[in-house]
Length: 136
Length: 136
Length: 136
Length: 136
Image 1 (cartoon, rainbow over the protein chains, first blue to last red):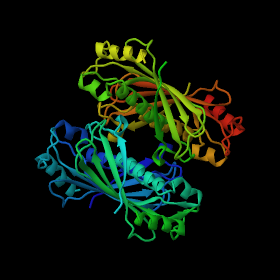
Image 2 (cartoon, chains in turn purple, yellow, green, red):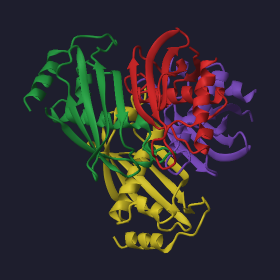
Image 3 (cartoon, rainbow over the protein chains, first blue to last red):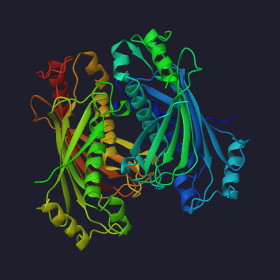
């Protein structure tokens, strides 16, 4: 299964008084991983919204295995769970680049809604995107 | 089971360009719910750290049922899952106060670590806290 | 000059690895101070937007005098600079409640724009608001 | 005067319900600009802390000239104000890459403190860093 890889740097703003990256901030990195995969597949998320489709997060989860600290360079591996119908689901694995150790794993599930916030079936262009992903 | 209730107001900083509160920001509200429950139980989380014990998040999840918008007043109901051993787990339900509708449910699980970041058994004062909670 | 007072609690999410509240997060507290003053004056900011007027920040500044730490309770004193024409300006003083010491002072200046993002003269209802403030 | 250039991408988490990047989030980009300049000069900020010196923000300001939106690629130009004694001051100019238009200008001033939080004179290695910057 194809994994898209993006690197980020932990900044001071991400950290907390325990000296670690605060748990909620991992979802920024997940967003970056997901966005860059959309862009890599030729359809930036911004264009999906231009077409009148929005993909708000409906469900998420994350396990934190090892702490991440200020200035650590991390890699986010993002993959698409193509078995999911009626929306989209992304899986993420976060590594510290220097140590190559997994620090967190998680997912986000997204509803497919129109401009009125109503849940709709994924339009053909999203299914095409998923099919294109499967051929990578 | 006792639920501690805290209200928060959604601020502009919490929202995103979709017009909703951004998913990662719900974990700020979960933290507020959890902190205020610790304080209510007579042991603010700050004092737990003073005693040399830290409770970093090891695992979390959240389901988003309805959108939350700027200036909505929300209520966070926090409860403690006393069946969990070796750490702590909190469950959260978020309501919009005006409509009394549930907008999100989630949990955070916390490891119990010492000042060196090593996982340790919950000390007696944490077990006492859990027992005190069960009597409410 | 009337000062509106609001209290906030510093949460873990606000802090950084230096053990202090991260500088950018003070603007969350400024926003809370400003919002609660609008509400107190009888015109929540949300209603201003409903009337087609938006007040994006055009300019801001902040001096940090003393550090603020996790779980500190802070008070934000917000006042309106009525001498400003063509927009709005708010001044803020942040105290630690326990010590009653000033930890930061700052301001935000706001343009008055319509729904197309075009700068407009403040409509009568905003001037009325300012006049009402001056009578407090 | 040498300007260090770093690019960032505006993510959903940075935006607000007005459809713009929220003003406080610009300070994340300023931090990234400043950090990458330290790294470029051969002394990552993390190493400065390892040497027992901390540079908390003592004062900041920002003017917002044009809105920035989701997925805009921005460039942060960071320069060091070498005339400042007793601490450090950085100036920032933020551009949208696509349009090459300036969207914000700002600065952060930093105190030089030791591990006890006491203000100290900048140690020789920081003066060396500034001298090295001036030769670029």
